[in-house]
Image 1 (cartoon, rainbow, N blue to C red):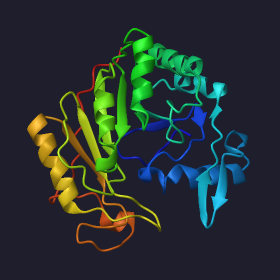
Image 2: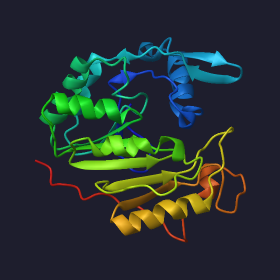
Image 3: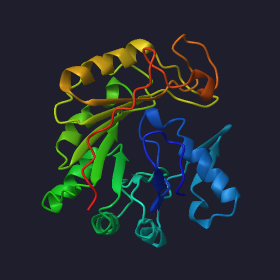
Length: 259
């Protein structure tokens, strides 16, 4: 899976498939339904990763390492921003440390790409890097997801991570996050939830994050309103668009020159 419609990246790379629901932000994760569809299309990598829960498709806890996928970024000659594991979490407890190390080696060997790793388990990410003597790769950006105030402590765990760029995805933003410490955080992505069961996003929650990004010098990227627009009306993601305060916000951290 290379091409993507995710606004803040160029491509996706999935050396791991499958996950588990960890917090309320995971409840309507697009990857669960996508995994079911990919299994129906005959992709064995995604077979047996989900189950039905009422009308919903949810993860069943099976997580699969795909060693054959490790070769993919090496074949991409043109530099890309690559979202690592859009269909899983590299730091899921069922992913072996040895396999994470292999993924790290691929990223080390392909410095012309910039890799974006997003996890809901930044504590494990920090422990992994400490075990490697703070193995900082200049082309690897490390981030965590924060959907509401309940999981704000993930930011403190992220700050313990040795990284060239640290970022937070406030998506899906399903509640206010309150005052947060953005010291050492280079980039913030904010977005609402999409889909039939999407939970509303409120402009005041975005305002709160935007003001704190301004104060801390953190690059601000507004990804989408999702299913609920700024006027609190339900429409398609496309109809709601990406404008916040009357403009598009595509802030990004400074990208170091490719090797």
